[in-house]
Image 1 (tube, helix red, strand yellow):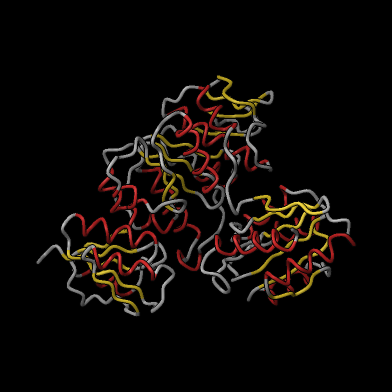
Image 2: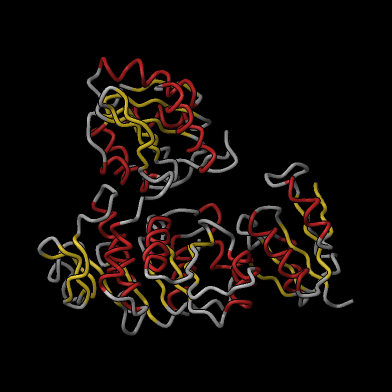
Length: 449
């Protein structure tokens, strides 16, 4: 049988891909090298749909499948995948598979180092407030393949796309692409900054309409000549990014698009200048999609915010406890610190990543009265703080101890904010940043109740 497919990775995207292929008559094997993967409870459902599930199995190029679908966490240059491609087998990502099933629908594709989750959630909320069936999917919400499985096709697909997903999506071409920011990240996977940038740029190259963050210095200098007529955004008004001409900008307290006032700039219930930029990108997408100003304003005004991104989870004795678990690198964590009221207790640490930590350390000096370090990065972060001349830190190792210790310190230090903004991946102690953030939220709510 030549319709044999092998899906690698028993996560949300792998499960969706396997179900989609099985529905289309493929003979599907879904494998995961872990014996007890995060979504192991899905095995019986998959098997009832005809999918063969192999746990504790590593894919090899000797596999008979003609189509291999990889989940985002699987390295694109894995030797077995390189060999499979050399043998003429087709290797694609789950996002590419979903695109092939939903390419008759218009897409908004959102990428960037930081900010893409907020922009995706806000864009989807605006479209939905206008009465459109426009699910947020990809790295946020459902896997894109799940959208393709639904009996009623969406009006729009609003997809957050990581560099891992773009790398494995040769033909995915959204009607509108949004590029939020660009800073060094995922270099262990992509090896060089130039390669990481090239992968990100591919999404916009394949899009019909391109919206770029004009306040991002790297995009402003490196992306300016890449696209014929991009739409630029700026929080600083029309003149700030000259000679570029912004399409969406903030002026006189309003978000304006092409000169038209759409919504008050303070209508978004999320703190920080970076969220003003996120607002501009989402509003620009909605305007380009043909939504009217009243519908866009309603969507912005009713948007509740994003879990795990500067999410206020509790207030105790006038102190805000903020869950910023999605800040998995130095740049995102620096943004989180910039957005909150000092003096603060910062909870940081997890599985360390490479990157430039200078702005992050500067923000700690400016905002933090105490830093509580957790996870495997704690000794490394302690050394960074020592080197920066910041001695007000403690290694507490676990989230439980960090939250408990913050309740002891906060009254003594006149703290305004306790901020979980890890600047790290979560995989040393948690399966993902969502579980880490959920744990922080539940600890705060139970300890402070």
